[in-house]
Length: 450
Picture (tube, rainbow, N blue to C red):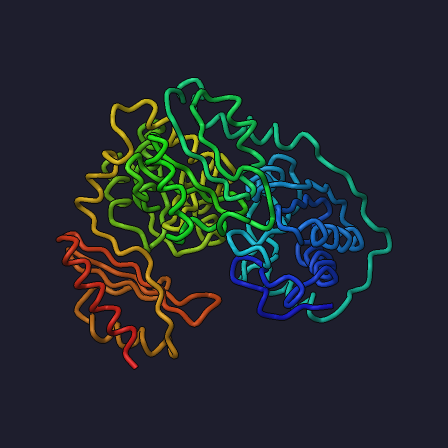
């Protein structure tokens, strides 16, 4: 068996297949998952990676041996598993996936009833401790195994209720599934909307032969940015590997930042549903806060990470939440993140507007000058944050998640990576692009001292 402690992360389990985690470890994790959650009925799906069917089979064998009844969902996007768990009233669920990571990785995302995620603070650590401790004794009576062949249809039907499909018409749209899980659900979706789709890499292929399934990285967006312009499309949409995140390219080939997209979606949702609470992560542009307020909503800024955002949404009964990283969450979708619903909403917004996407975000780009997330490798993250805390002592400081410092016309957040010796900076200026760049360089110089 191969299993190293480092695969148990803050939000999921993830590591190099064969070198850090293997099938025997997957079986132990499945059994430990049942021990920690106490689940009697569990749904388990897997992504397209070459290692995923074997890892899913091992996880399922572990869960069965622990006495749980398991529904094997087969090939399923992460959000399809969330949907299955909530709709079916399962006690828990898991999807074998390494999300946006390269093909040599494997992992598990785990949820309890209602698709509420396990995190490092709420379950993953205990699963890791039990799995590392050894092979637990099997239950006296193993569980039973079943399947759910109708899941894809029900999932697509549910997502389409968030829009008026008949209103999504007259658009040319470039679609880039990166050979990941969006390629499973996009074909049936396209049967319900009248767009001129220009599809690329919809064929699920766990080798990800065309580019890594991580559109947050600029090099992975070059293809779709060029394709939108070359095909004279109205927009482009790209998905990450497990398809729970989507990313948007305007008709000029420009990337639309996740916080600007959150602002657009928040305004759209609040206009249709009246005053509601919207949660967003503390890295975000003030454009999000301002858009929520302008639409009569209640902005609620919270810490980064899907496990924290989903719990916060439940606490404040938020209708919607968005993160800079391209995660978008909906109360009526079990407070879960989905890559399909925001894609459908943006298509409807553009189809019903006389403005192209670039004009919709032009006012935001002109007023809110954002740095995007910038990583710095540091030997001592704590010391770097101490330097920032001292240097910007005259600013309004908060330490909900890393260090946030605000002034009247600019602000920044610096957070440590959960998995690497990195500090992540997000900075914004309301003055100008040049002012943002000056402030950005100043903060980075302090971070990178020594």
